[in-house]
Length: 112
Image (cartoon, rainbow, N blue to C red; front, side, top):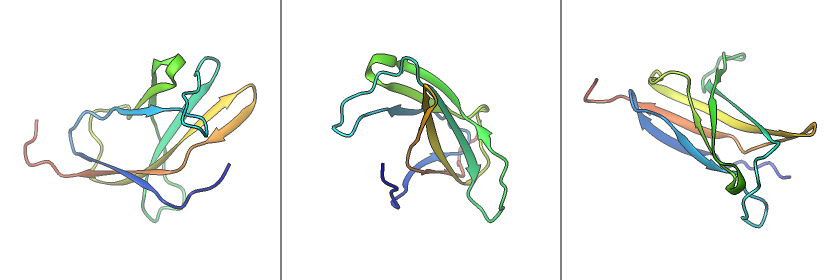
């Protein structure tokens, strides 16, 4: 496993419904079956707070055999700002974390 320095950024507008579709793939790009794997993800504000309060993301398995799942925050609206997250996969006591990614929430012109 290597640690990457490049951060992928997902940009959404405030009030958007957020569902981040993900695939768990092996090193060759083939899907990993999610059966027996626990998936967790936390989202934290990307600011100078040394101990930010995590937002626990909901995980929904869409297609276990193809390694497809979705992450979504527990409420429909995040505050405007920058956040960061990663994904933790656990199976039989073994843990593997994804690269960190960024979520940027920008202001909406049209509000609900």
